[in-house]
Length: 487
Image (cartoon, rainbow, N blue to C red; front, top):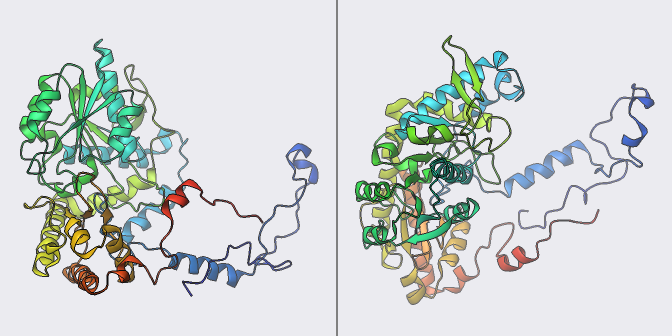
């Protein structure tokens, strides 16, 4: 059934069929001005209710999601989203609160946001937080704009921002959007920032270094204090990409490492569902010297104990979006923090690191690393990168082939071909919410695919076989997308 071509709801439409019949209109026809009335009825599908339910139920089963199975998408922290969070976000006081409500009549929401700011401040080790950015990339943009405002306020015209060659693709894109020149910093033999390369490129024209620690290779940069010293030595800011915060939450804090600006992915670290376009949230935490430039309005607590929105911020970079951010995401993240507490957040990170190291050890035990060796063979944090170069050379299988074949085993593939400096990269992040049994099954699936590939590589090259759609011409789909269908 899943391999059958999916029909649109319009293709299933039959004239005269109904799921609902509206009552006769009892509003005078002249109530709506003529210019706003339709010239003809809308072209809506005509279909019975059971068929509507079955149609969307079938479509939902064509999707892979965390409620379906393991989702080890490296550098994305796709962990379980507790159902309790959905219940509290759906409470009427949360779900029906209008964003233009007067602050005096939205004290509960403002208190939640203020307390969430405090919790994130503690996690980051930085005193000031803005919840406004809507995603990680939006938080990055906020950080770059804050940096620009900071230097412009001092009459210091800087032109460059440093980004490691392991950084997320959004980092250089954000730098360009912020009006700066991207300068790449190399990686050393241990998988961290090449300190000597950094030292050579850090000058008075550098405004910022964008970094995540642990980095995209899944290793903690042991030179972080020296890196911070070099960056601050030329007067630049140090920005923390929070995509990998799930590895260190409760164990160490970016602010203690020397970072001036941190963004959080609430939709990753703090269990808000994400993917498919959102919604997400990318709050930022900043040091005292960056605070005057934070977005406005800020959620504040007045001396009388009430909560309010503070617009009186003359040096602010202004708004980054309408209203205060994606409030439903705040509710879910607040519920997660309260559910776990500080000890629980620390345990979550410890378990994420344990799971990654366990999975890597399991892959070694099964012989998988003979063909997929670790790119940097040292104790990993929450994720690790394998190189499929030996597999490609000896079995004539690409990382893409392996990823597609995993779909037939019921697993969503990890991130492939990223980071770019690893040949045939496979970036795996198991997260803390997966069981040992799940990790074992995933490791065995990889081992089975490699054994199968040694005997008949054509099987993996033509995979997947059991999915609703087989291999796409991805270049063609990107260049010539079909996004409309005639009715």
